[in-house]
Structures are given as C-alpha cells and as structure tokens.
Image (tube, rainbow over the protein chains, first blue to last red):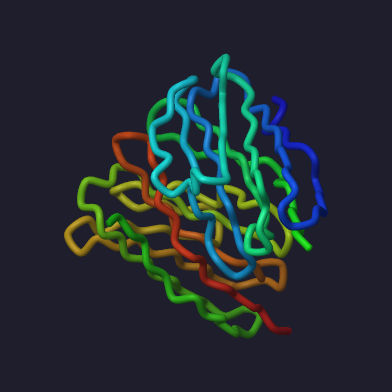
Length: 113
Length: 109
C-alpha cells in the first residue's frame, strides 16, 4: 500500500516570498492533517480536513497560511508571505475514519532566510 | 484547551535497562490513544495503539488509566536502536489528535 506522499522534500525561500506544499494521502483516507513541527517540539496542528471540509483550522495563521482539499483527496498548503519563524518541517498525515492511527508523509523541510 | 503533557527528558538509560514514560491528557472525552516514535529528522511512526485493557508488543507495553487520565509506555531490555523521541497522542470523537511534545530517549552502551 502506498504511503502518504509529500513534495517537495526541502525548500529554501527568502522571507516575504510564497511557497506551496503538496500532499497526497493514502487512498481512501477521509481525514487529512497538516502539521508544523519545530525542532524539539511535537507536531502542531495547522488544519484538519474531513473529506473536503475543514474540521479544525483554529491554529492556522490565516493572514498568511491557506490550505485546500478541493476534491477530498490531495491537498495543498500555502504560505504567503513567509516569515523567518515559519522555518519548520511541514508534515501531512492521513487517517481512515474511526479511531485508527494516522500515517505521516516524510514532510517538507522549509527554511526561510 | 485540550492538552497532552509529557516529560521532555532526555532520559539517558544504559542498554538493557527498563525505562518507563508517562503522559497525561486533559480531555476526559478522548477515545483513542497512541504512542509514536520519531527518529531524528524523520516523520513520526506508530509504535503502538493503547487499549483500555493494556497491550504488549514484544519488549513494549502500553497502559491506559482513564480514571487518572494518563497513559504509559514501558520498554524492557532497551536496545541502542530504541534511541528516539516518543510522542504520546490522544484522539477525540472529531478525529482530532492532540500530540504531546515528545520524550527524548537516549540508550547508552
């Protein structure tokens, strides 16, 4: 079974530039999460989708971050404009309905300079 | 606010020793619980789900105490390869997952 796919793996941009990340979850997984993880910390939820609807985006900095999952399958996360403090690993995870475990992609390591 | 609390460590443990981690969660309505392992510069991977009756997988044992709202992970006969960060997770009825910050474990020869 294919895992969660994310791209790109690495990205370096200058502050105030924009960047987009892509995630393709495991086939059939209705729930999709985007997390931000800073070194030494646990994953911080940015947004959670259930199919193509948003369940929780309370911690998404909406002035600069946006995310969509138009067809309920793959998803994109965008940052515009980026700040230095956005440097982190952005993890996408997906999950079947119910109380099953979440599976993660390898993440995108973003460096803002 | 829903929270999951863990001791960040690091736990420095000699090879072969037994080590235990605890994790507390604030949402009494949490329904699912997991331990994940995260290696340096890698994504988190499921170590084990935690069931009400407790569960064991080889050298690893997980326990859930709903009354006190904590879960535990016990690692017996620790190996060098067990060195990693262990993340505690609690899930609720909206499929939300609340993550702890992780406990760093270092196994020394």
